[in-house]
Image (cartoon, rainbow, N blue to C red; front, side, top):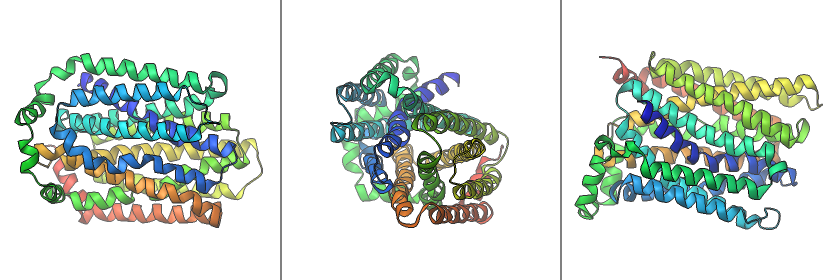
Length: 421
């Protein structure tokens, strides 16, 4: 199990690097350059490959092996970072946008391969909880490293050295995956090799509309689809906009990089880790009911801070506390959500498990991406106070939806399935 956790955690770590660059470093950089919140919000369009990844998920499932897909995509990320090191962001903003788009595209393909590996590797409730903890913690650690960590030192190291460092990180992980001993495990790669020997026959036999019908027919899928599209709406607006509010009124870019990009994300990793441990002892429904209510309460506290515009040490401390609590609960919810998604995908036929999980993961990204893209426009149009009232309302609605579903809907089914025999 330790080998599985290290393998998955490292892959998710490098997968989280593009997200950290775009979610933590780029918005602060653009806001410091005087860009509007609306324009900053529209940069979320660079995440678009994650929305489309379900289209090429069947290809990754059925052509070649996951090892080759992983080595190829991670090597491609290394080359993309090497190209980015030669760019000056002030003079080549479209080039920077293009490299980030390419990184998201390659990372989305890598995600399909590693998710398929995780679905095949993790067995039982205990392994699912720990494995998804490794997934979320690894991804967020990569995000912290690339976002908060590099934002805090970019003034000293510079843009080129930052991307050269990322080039060496990706190259090292590609070599690790290429020669990793876990890749010899028949449990992980056996059915993939079998699919490869069958060649294109399997691809031709399964028509696209039949694949979609199979995906939706998997037990628990309809509720899970609705849940992953909506569970982050209010939280995503607050996570995206509150740091920029602090940048406008209370904190410098370097302070924000440290407190929001490192400390708060550290709490997010702590919440994700706790989620995995709680899943080994309690049912997922019981945990989710309470955590979603706590998240709504934390957003009430954070929204109240928007009324104080004068900088002060006390307000900075309360803002850091708010960010930390919000990220802690958000990390806990993310682990619970991805465990629910993976549990649902394991009910699918083996040949479409990775595709099913990619389908759910795509919708999860789509829900967050769509709202993040418009959140800046909402703030520019209505102001921070009214916008956060909307975010709070959405968060409360999601908590009510989850609370009801634990007793009457799909989560009750997950809860019963998770009980030890």
